[in-house]
Structure formats: C-alpha cells, structure tokens
Image (cartoon, rainbow, N blue to C red; front, side):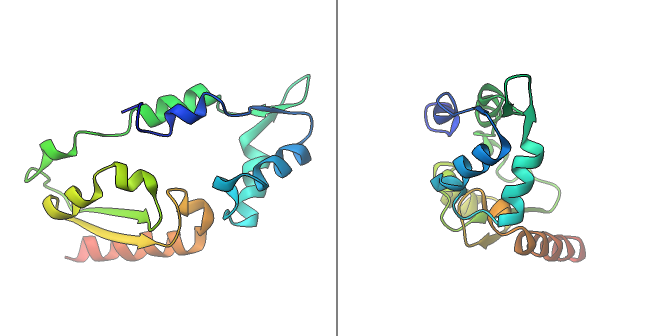
Length: 145
C-alpha cells in the first residue's frame, strides 16, 4: 500500500517554519492546498502547527501522516456481500487516491451509497460547508431506507 499511497511523499514534507505567517504562505502556494477554503487554511495554521523554542512545527510529524496513509484499508474486496449496515462513500471528483482505491470495484460490488463533491481527496477542506451538507443528507437517506 505504501508504494502507491501518499505515504511516499510525506517523507519529504517540510515540517518547520520561523513564523505562522511563513507557514501560511508556504501552504497557500502548495498545489494540494490551493483549493482549500480560506478559513480552513487559517484554522490549519492556527491548530495544525505548534510553537517551539525555535519556531513552529507541524503538530503531526510527516511520519505520523505516512503511518495513517499506510493503514488505509486495502482489503475491501473480502467484504463483498458481508456488510450488514448501511454505508456511504463520499469522495472528491478529482481524487487520485479514489482511483487508486479501486473505486470502480467498490461501485460494482459493494452496496455503498456513493456521493461525490467536486475536489481532490482533500475535498472536506476545500468545500467544508458542502461536505457537511452532503454528510447530513447522506446519513438521513441511510437511516430512513
């Protein structure tokens, strides 16, 4: 899984800045953060980096982020026909990660409700209000069916 996931790139991720402003400018220029909602990016800087004696560093180290990516499920095929509760997949229309996760297999073989929001795999940070509304709507549908 690590070979194909975003875990590879986290090894080279910058994790330290002299000021919060420097961190904000750094992330604002990054392609993955370019479509972030402005308030979300400010919150990311406010709560996602911590002050140290020498400056500011990421709250989660790049290694922790890589470990999270490495534990994403890659065994969904074994659950075909076994799911006993309603389930939904909400994803970004332009998500490279969704393509790697065999989304086409999931659509064909799993009884998930599928919803999509324009954006990358980081769509919740790009479109937070639309994401919240989609989650609420999807949950209402799942519990009433």
